[in-house]
Length: 133
Image (cartoon, rainbow, N blue to C red; front, side):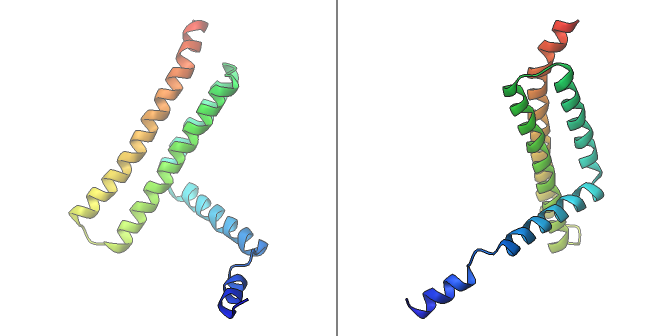
């Protein structure tokens, strides 16, 4: 075995401690996101309502899959939007038209994901609500 192959293996060994630490950092990021962003509270309230309605209207397995996906889709879009906004503010703290457009497009991504999630919710819950009425 060549020396450089050995060094490569040593530097890239599987380390449970490193892997665990990466989860700690990820959960820290989620915590900061939840604590500091008011929009995430709106999404979380909506997610809780969807989950409650899911139990009330006895949604099936496939509907749960779609609902869980939609919730995750919106929260992921929101955390990416927040990350992009922080990054743009970091690299361009002064007012900048292009930086503003970048932030607007990221916010548009959240809007698209929220509209998609709402459509999924309507497709699943509207027939159930109409049936009850």
